[in-house]
Length: 81
Image (cartoon, helix red, strand yellow):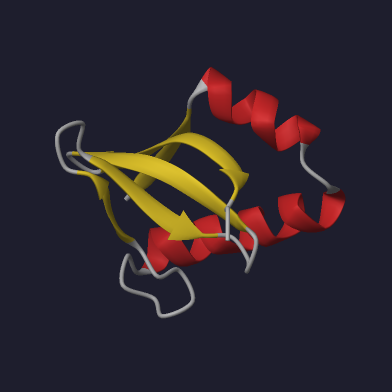
């Protein structure tokens, strides 16, 4: 699998705290290796738009689409809860 980052994601990434950026980078590597890796908790987030959600850490999530052999990461944000 390949990964592509949307412009919106790059803005969020730059604004995120350093520890969140490091955790995000790690989680993307896990995603590339195995969509079902337990620490990702990946699940379909928006069926109509075909958007998935995965965990960065306890407080942050990232959102992506799957197209052929590419994960397009479209955003990241704090998780309410």
